[in-house]
Image (tube, rainbow, N blue to C red; front, side, top):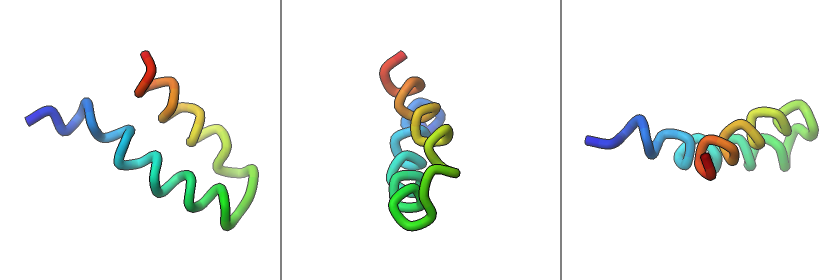
Length: 39
């Protein structure tokens, strides 16, 4: 219950990891998750 609401938080961890490893190609995905969590 509530998974869809928490999903951006779970995905953020992986996107931040990929951003750290692979660089700016994951920046947009990170920001989308952040906006979803704050919105």
